[in-house]
Length: 291
Image 1 (cartoon, helix red, strand yellow):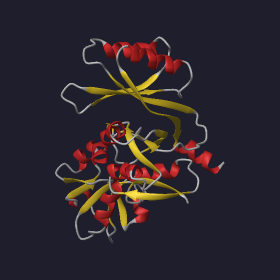
Image 2 (cartoon, one colour; image 1 turned 180 degrees about the horizontal axis):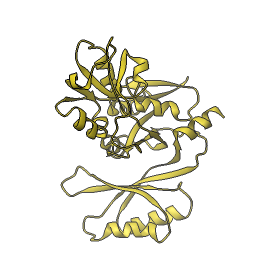
Image 3 (cartoon, rainbow, N blue to C red; image 1 turned 180 degrees about the vertical axis):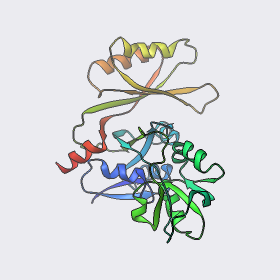
Image 4 (cartoon, rainbow, N blue to C red; image 1 turned 135 degrees about the vertical axis):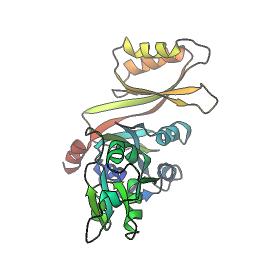
């Protein structure tokens, strides 16, 4: 049977583009209605693996993904892909292009709307904003109501998939807009080597240890282990109680990282690995896929 990959759908999302850009070989792609549905598909064995967004360079972390990986089913991160993101304003196909001043509603995913805040404020300050589970779902909705003066913020691919046309291209506020997507699953997966690798852990601090976070970071610092991200997320046990999600810029080894983890656990902290994995970008992953 072909490996089944779940992704945030419908067709035309950035998540689908990320899934198809990963060097996964001959697989079957399964669109799902939300990030939670994508991850649940793997948890319930309806799909083998899932591709979900985890962080955007402008809007920060995708909390629903992080929280599921922490609180949900044990589902390690197996790979990461950094994908450049360009947002486009699309409208239903017409004989004449709908001017920006005539658009009454813009539909899109909350992150996409936030990435285009300056454009919307400058050119469409009075427009109604409606949120959708994905940019492709927003595009699909606009295409199904050509009689309405609506627009969607979506990917370039949606114009090829649905009866849509561009109202304005590249409307994101910042040019260096990237989203990190992760491949997760219950079973290990053979993947080609990448130019860089990461290990992600979750650290829980003891409640009665002042300066514990400083001590955790020191365990990495004196070993000259580079950290690319540290973020707090609620434990959901009460106010002021947090996990710390830490990205380490190297694969799990036999000496340095085990030593750092042992030192951290000796402080009374809990350390849980979320995965050790290759990091691809769209160009390198496609090259590997063709090779």
